[in-house]
Structures are given as structure tokens and as C-alpha cells.
Image (cartoon, rainbow, N blue to C red):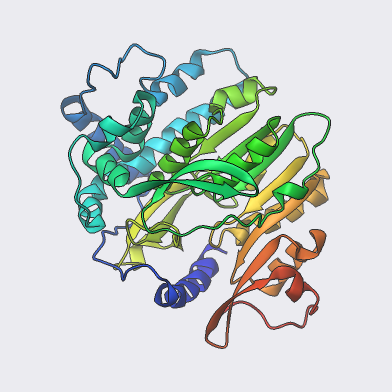
Length: 403
């Protein structure tokens, strides 16, 4: 499945890159994905270096404060009363985060250079509140990298699905306010609502959903560290409460967003590659880092849809949004199995289908006749965005969207 997905997406992305409005790829850094043994060795090396070379927080970043380090807070939750399964979930989250960030530290110098932006030392410290500065340092590891990411963003007032919001985003990226996933037509239930946002990006959909439905618990999954950082920043800018991992398990009555820095695959704890041309991340796609030389390749660890659904404790899902540049090949079969084997009910299934074969697209057609999906198709040498419900009416004999 993984090999076929990479072939499919590689061919599709080659054409997409040509058609993209972003600048042509610059020299990036790409290396093979780490094996567990290599990751362990790199992690030990990193921890040794960090004893002498970690950043020194300024006085306003008080290490005794509750917001000083998210990682310390997460590790502290292991001592809190909780079930063994929940304790293991938190332990796995910490370990997998460490393994992925080891590789990020290795490629940062070339990545910062490839951004090609002028930055002033201390930019991040001057702009970010202390808690977000610490989040950025944990994700990006060096202040130089964090400064580069912050310097390459702009802040905009936007309206998405009728909801006003303030968004930090990469300069030059284009977004619109169309309610593509039908948030305005969702019908709230009597209790807490639930949403899974796969491909959280800047957080606009999750923010709009929470503003419309304040009694909603959302898991927002975004694989790229810099984009995930902007998602966290945007939650803060818009006053959307964050839920920490252990708290999501222990306090099921708390509304807000649990942000997760992961890719999505059929199994947990795998390592996926995501390729993109810094600083642009909107066109990021799954790839095999060992075969890519012209783009930056970011290894990330995975969660499965099964795990995300289980985190809600068997609750019905009000909105499952999937816009993940190809992980539909994993998500949709998992969803079909969950619905067959557990009776899971999803009230709204929405998203984008990127060069998917008809058998995958057929599952989307079963969700309100594909009304809230768009199919990105490569047909006869042309890339087209076609409303999925139009393709659904053509039946199983329709031309496939795959290249």
C-alpha cells in the first residue's frame, strides 16, 4: 500500500509542482528516514549536545512558570493518576516526538538558508508570548529557525465559514473563505460535539468550527512542524482553548482543540516523509525521502484514524475533515472498517481527494453523495478540481482521477 501510494502521489505531484504558483524548488536537504536504531543513537547524541548548547531563556521566560516548557508538562503527566493505556499513549507521544525532531535538527541549517529571507535575531522573542516561544523552540529546536519562520509570516484578518478570525500564515500563501466543508449546515447535538481535522494546516477550519460550536472537542492533526507551530499560534490568537494530551483523556467535558504534530497512516508509530519547498508548505505531500533530492523532506511520526476515533471513547463524530494530500488512501479504508465493525457514525465526512482511484472515491460518494468533497483529478495531462458529487453521478464506469 505504501509503495503504491508513493508512486501515485509522486507522479501526481510532479505535474502539480509544474502547475503550482509557488517558486521553483531550491536546493534542499533530504536524507534517508531513520531506522529505530539510528533514531535512538541520534537522540542520545542530541541530548548530550543539548546539555551544552540549548538556548538560554531570557528572564521573561521563567522556567518555574506553568508555561515554561510544554515537554516538561507532558512528561509530568506520566506521574498523574491515569489508566495504563492512557499512560502508554502519553509515553509514546513523547518518544515519537523526540525521534522526529532529531532529524529536524540535522537539516535545519540548509532549511533556514533555503528560505532565502532576511531575518533579525530576536524576532521570535519580540513577537511571541513566552509560552508560544517555548512551543516554537521545542518544535524547531533553534532560535535561528524559529526567527526565520516568524519573519516569513504575515498576520491577516479573515472570514472563514462566516466566522471572523486572525490568522498568521506564510507570506504569499493564498486562502479563501468558502465554507467548503459545510460547517454552517452542521446541526449541533444536545451535548459535546466532536471533530477530527486531518490536515489542520493553519487551523482555520478548527477555529471556525469552535467559534460556531463552543461545546466542541477537536483533534487537529498537522504533520509539518512549522505549519503546526502556526496552527498553535492561531489558536492562541483567536482565544481557542488548547487541550493537552493527558487532559483530553482525563477531562472529557473540556471543549477546545487538541493539536497533534503527526502524519496519518494505517498504523501508529511509523515514520513518513513529507516533501515541500521552504517556506511554502501548502503543497506538502507524502514522499519517500530517500528518493527526493530537489526539495526538503521532513520525517514525521504517524497516528492512525483508529487511534484518533478511540480517543473520543466511541463517541459519534460530528465532522471528519480530511485534506491531507494523499493520506485518504489510508483514512478511507480505516473509516469503512470502523463503520462496519464498530458501528461508528460520522455525521459529516468532508475534504479533498487527491488523485484517488474510483474505489476510494466511491466511499466519499456514500457521504451525502459526495457533497462536501472535491476531487483533484489528473486526466489526459490536465489537473482539475471537480466537485466530487458531480463525479458520483457518473457511476462506477467514470474515468479515474489517478494519473
